[in-house]
Amino acid sequence: MDKIQIDTVLNRIEEATGQHANPRIAAIVHRMVRDLFHMIEDLDIQPEEFWSGLNFLAEAGRSGELGLIAPGLGFDHFLDLRMDEAESQAGIAGGTPRTIEGPLYVAGAPVAQGEARLDDGTGEGEVLVMEGQVKDGAGQPLANAVVEVWHANALGNYSYFDPTQSAFNLRRSIVTDGEGRYRFRSIMPVGYSVPPNGATDRLLKQLNRHGTRPAHIHFFISAPGHRKLTTQINIDGDPYLWDDFAFATREGLVPPITRVSDAAAMAALGVDKPFASIRFDFTLHADQANAPQAEVARQRASVAA
Image (cartoon, rainbow, N blue to C red; front, side):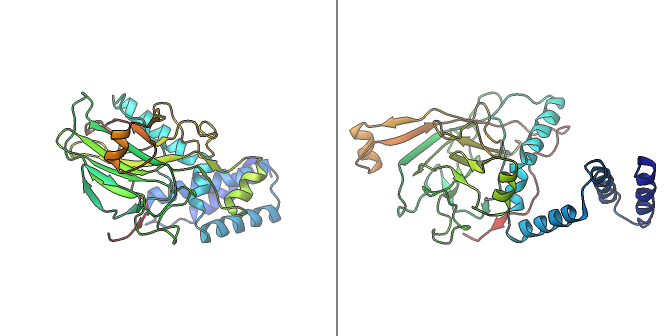
């Protein structure tokens, strides 16, 4: 079919839209259908391929893997880059880089003041201590900022989604002290891959790609009068550090790791072997009326603490 014929069909479909349709939804659906019609023609997509693709998306939805496919195809990273561009146009620059949230946040984690232990003490893994400050754009500490942190265990699994872990294991919300300081003890996370033979894995294999993420720790950082930051740090030295299937590794988010073997430091922490230490400060931007909303409304898991 030529373009005129395709557009004739599309116009008929769009004209069927009711008078009281949601204009934003209608505009998005019409554009999506229009682009797909032309893609079907341009790539000569066959009916079997169309239905196979539709069934694949249905399967991915049932298994909860759309939240993995989206970052794996770069959508999450692209949305971050668009937000960066919008902030730049609003005159916002610098600060801690944002990066993807991922699909594994759970609301309702226990709240701690200043310092917390994330792990429940039952899992294996190298002890990790991470600390730093939350600051404003002028470098001043932000008291009572909230540092929400979550990460995988030494097997690459997240509590709530992994029923073998205790509730909110490796998840906490930490309120900074008067000097904007936070500190937590945990275990070193490891990288992990998408579920083997799942929808994401099968799709990536068709693209000759892997589905592995480097070890990382997720954060939401918020403070009154400031833009919420969604970010994560990556663990330096991970073999997939700059080959993240979700394209989430960014410059400025790979802090150095120090191995602490000082006897007094180990005794103070209650451990008998060296532990890993990370120092990382977060910088937030002040709220700005002409900037886009920094907090993204999306469906998330939630459990009462």
